[in-house]
Length: 337
Image (tube, rainbow, N blue to C red; front, top):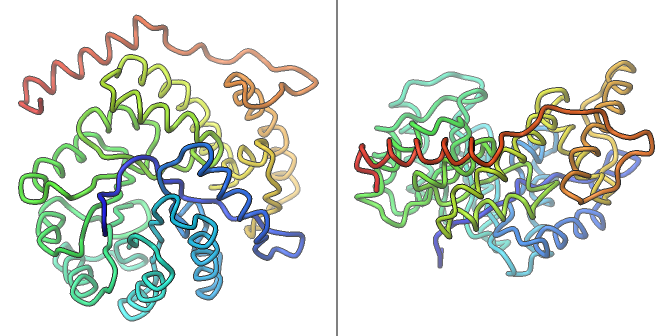
C-alpha cells in the first residue's frame, strides 16, 4: 500500500432494482457522487453495504464496480468478511487483482472465540494474503479483538490498521497507546460517527462512517475541522450529525434508515433484501419524513410539504466548548498531548 489509510471512508450502500438485483448504473452514479462530495475513500461490502445479504459472486461484483468507477480517484478498502480462512484468502486475492488498496476482515463470527483463536485466525491470513489488511472489530456481531491481540497482530507487515465499531473512546486510546509506538504507520479508523470528533481528538486517523452515504459533506467537514485543530466547531457539527445518525440507526431495521436518507439525496436505492411487514412499511414512511426534516436543516433537501414538528434543541456553543475543554484537559493529564 502506497499511503496510510486516513480520512472518511464510506461503507457504501448498494442500490437495487425492481427485481432486487444490483442496480449497476445507479451504484456507479452514487460512487462518483460520493467522491465528488469529498470522501477520502470507499468501503464496499461493509455492514452498511449488507454484505451478508449478497452472494459471494455479488460481493466480488460490487468491489469490481467500485474499483472501476473510482478509477484511482480514492483508495478502496474492500470488505473481505467471509466465513473461513480459505474463502477469505480467495476474496483477498480477487480484490488485490481488482486494484483495491486493502481489505477489511472481520473477526470470526457466529462462533465466539478466545483471544488466542482470534489471533490464530488473523495471523494465518496475514501470512498468506497478497494484499494489505485492516482488522475489523465489531463485538456486537463477531468475536472481539482485544488490545493485546491487536498489539500482537500489528507485528505482521500486512496488517496495516483496524476499523473499530465499538464507539468506545477509551478503547481507542488504549489501542493507539499500545500500537503506535511500534507501528507509526498503523491506521486507526472508527466506525461509530456519534463519537467521530472525540475519536479524531484522541488520535484516530479517520472513520468508516455509514452517515457519509447521506451527508458526506458533514463527515468530511468534521474530519477537516479536527485536522485543523478546531475541535469546538467540529463538536458542534458532531452534535448535529448525531441527531441524524440516531434517527437513521435506531428506529429502522439497519441499514434501512441510511438507505432512506441517502435516497432523499436523489438516488434510487430500491427496496432492501430484508422483507418488512406492512406495519414496518408504514412506520418507515413516517420516519423518513423526520429524516427529511433533519436533512433540510442541513440545507441538503427541501422540507416536506406538511412541515416539520419541533425536535430536541442541540447543545449551544458554550456547552460544546465546555465539553471539548474538559476532554482536552483530561487527555493532557494523561500525557496524550
